[in-house]
Image (cartoon, rainbow, N blue to C red):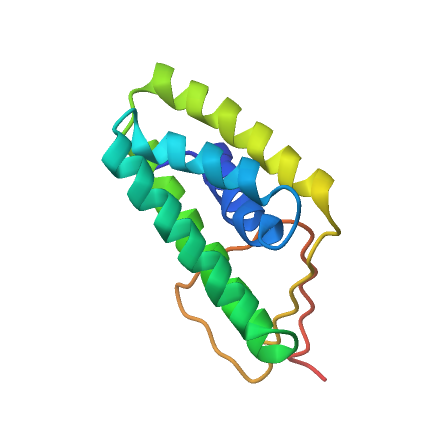
Length: 146
């Protein structure tokens, strides 16, 4: 299980993938993530490039509006999970190198375009032993008593 700081880095990495899609930062973020996941194996790196291209296509096909927002949320979660898995499999020293590279990719994505905001409405929802994961700025309001 990852420590909180590494989970945050993974969440930021997932957000960077979605944020970079369709911007000038895409090629840099795409290539950097493919190298991290490829681990020096050209075949794995190529598979990651293709996976990232599919992600971009899905995001672009969703267009704008509520459906696009749902697609973006799903893609952030998907890439966050993949990055968490990658980090869990690494020894601590290598983990820190990958974290540094991820932070650089996140900065590159953030510099390329406006921050995408996601709004989740959990009205009339009930949660028992649940977690809500997110990255960036998040506002949580309890409207239970309203």
